[in-house]
Length: 195
Image (tube, one colour):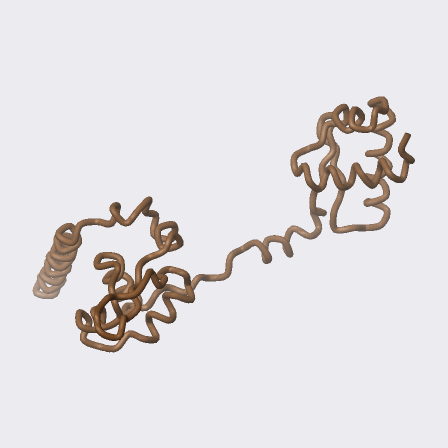
């Protein structure tokens, strides 16, 4: 039979790995000990963690035990788990990303021909953010790199596949609707000043 120290050590590991509350009966069966004995070992662990003032506590939940963080540390945990404000993509990065998404696979030269300006840095930034990747080489002179979007791009923008991208015509309609709304707002503003 395993020693008390070994069983308590194993209970700690089991709680850590299990994540959910660990049932005393299940823990007792693993060591072939009775339920009361297992419960007593869990209670001892709970007291030890409490006495030592650890950041982790052992909580009893309806005949099961689980590791939890100490309530006093909530503020620090929230700071850790609150995601840092993510930087938005610049207008030029969005333009390049849209070209790649709709024309992929596409070379840097083709992107620059559409935009009319160089895009080396933008491509580098999109690659670092794992939104685009090199997907091969073109058969054109110099065998330039072909770029395409990644699974990270799909996740980030909520698409299952590139086939889910809105049609270009739909985007043009949205732009025209936005421009019409802006024009209408300007007319309403000028009318209110005239009154």
